[in-house]
Length: 430
Image (cartoon, rainbow, N blue to C red; front, side, top):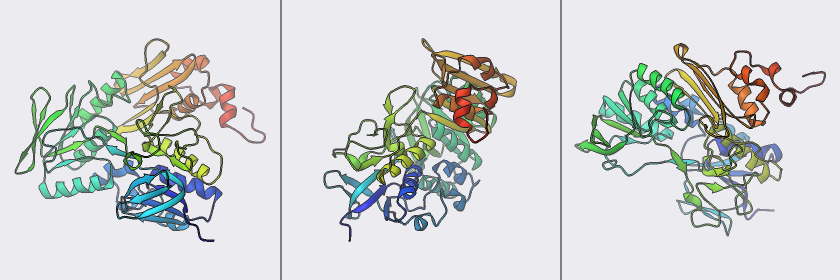
């Protein structure tokens, strides 16, 4: 019997969307899936766009799944088609080309869009964002045509750091401008930021903190300078606005689907409308460590949410479990990992610190009521996976504080309850 509605529709084509396809296919191997994406590309890894711009990876290495992924999973991938509205009453998705796709189950995985503040002159040629393959292509084309010598990166967070690295690799003289008083202010504490800033400066990249770009000046329509708050002028011929991303909820505006900072979801990744799910950077779920509802725009979270949503769309039973912030970024060769409440301090928190300035190695552990709730690794990231597991499983770490600060932390030294959780098998004694 012919269906009046498509059983599964997914809007998006990145980590969460692919996780959903794989979640559906574990339970339902045959029912077709319609996937809609405004980008024309096969699913690709967004964290690699800086390496693409720098020339360190080629097109083939950008792809997140094999080229036959859609075919093998019976996915009708409608690439280059923009979904513009979800009709939550009639259960249908409307597209920019006038199409309308009725559905039984829908996943909204539209991700985030770059946050671009109002900056006078930002419409000048040579001003870019940096979140997509098209952004990397546009910057590369501009560099090849206009041959800029200097670039300003507005934002010293994760996106800004990777943009600065790529532009530096392209031979530009780069200045990073960060509004906060330090680099990577959301991921690193003052000490960790100091080490990251040193790595950046050692590479030849300039850093200006405590201010931002208020105006972009142009000559013959193209960027020539930026004016910082306070009046300082930096000469540059290319500007990347890399302040961050915000959930792209535009597709559900005006519908019954509840939104706040993102689309509100429960532990099943279900929205307020039955049959409609959301996952990835567009979704707003529970943060295990704070108890607050907020977007957690990180790769592992998007992957898990997509998988949970897909499983439930196919009639299974899956829940999110623990979810909290985790960030990993290499700053010009200096690896950093931030997990959970890595920068928390004050009443109720116990902070343990290990630092080795000469080796640029620094660790910070945050405990609350004897349990690890945050960790920061700069330079030496060994054992970060073990520590993340302790945070996720809410294991009492009060008896291993000395080990956290030593080189002796290993599976055998951890509480038995945790060892039994991660090591299973007949005849194994932990």
